Image: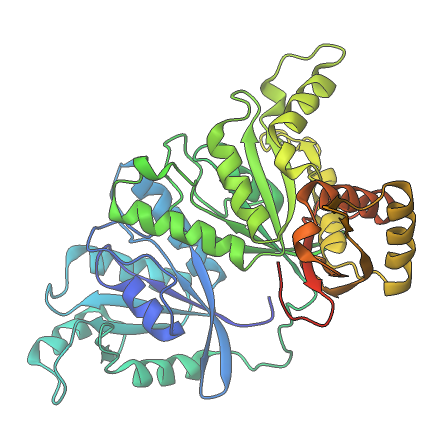
Length: 443
């Protein structure tokens, strides 16, 4: 990425995520008074005094911990430091300098990257408290007092960060990238897919359900094009969403779908389709996103002659409410058909953006109405005067008719099938709006 990267690091529960949210101006990172809430790296664009950079939030660093999750969080923070142009070390005024702060400071000094020392939770304005001067002992230079809750001192902190940023010689333009939300139930292999695609341990992988709590972005550019992959927390049944943190995660997964162009719905081949898969897919469908169903862990299935065909026919029945969706059988573990996954993502994104000329649409409409007469009621027959496409993402069509109440769902489905047979539109939902002539009423 051409934008410089600034990483926010520190031990757990010093307010890194609160500071991150304050600097970017939105609640993107999960904030909870529980150590270890933020686990993966979270990226967001930040702007200060006309300069743009990518800000990275990280999980708390516990240098000596043997806990599996905390150890992987430390590795994620180390990766963030490695990629960063500048690092902000966040400490806590109320706790003072701790042994962990010293260890994290030594880790940063070994990286050789510029370091800006932030002393958080200085909530009172005015002269800095005497306790601030203790933080000079970390050997990182001047400590900057900040209140991440109220925003005090963040301007001075960012001024210092700008001193170390490289010159911006080129602009980062993500307009041509395809944004892909990787969604599904917990523990179906979403993070493993992201890591295989990126060729690095981009997000934490564990067989502990609920490991991924944040939606994280990974930019991938290859011969297929430019993609932004968004890994999300697994979407669980509402009855099982007990923790406040888990509720945030589900909300964030839905938000990831909202800002994506394509939703890759991951299901576990060893488990098969479940009711929860239909709810996950249904949300993407309702939002009008291009969709791909990725059947992961296909390497773990014993194969016979027609195993894939039989499995796909079963899935087509399961996803009957999304008859347009393509299926790709993959393995994040072995890399099986990952190239095909890229091709399919690119294809459905193009289908979701397709625009059909009005003349060709009405040729199809005329043919369809000749083959099957529109429905009638009490001697009044539906007349469809013409149709036109009004928008893309998803393709949206307006029908002008004599009476909206005569336009039955079954006939709409027939017209939709005719349009799909002619123009494809594979992998994307389409939206129909019905208007009576000379009226603005929309059915």
